[in-house]
Image (cartoon, rainbow, N blue to C red; front, side, top):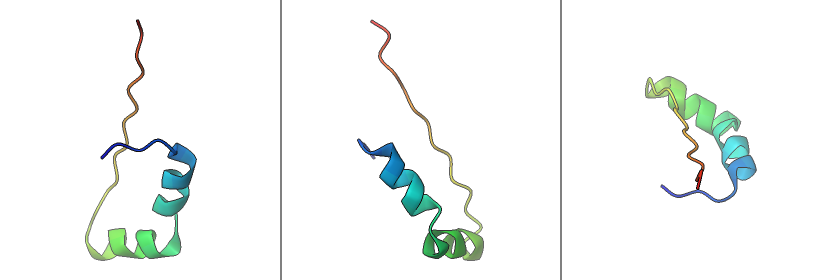
Length: 38
């Protein structure tokens, strides 16, 4: 997935719906950010 709005992504991941889905499905979210150095 390519996400350009990390604030919206974070808000969606913290929503009550997403938290309940994670709990029911034993899901742990991992988010990585890669920045171009040169």
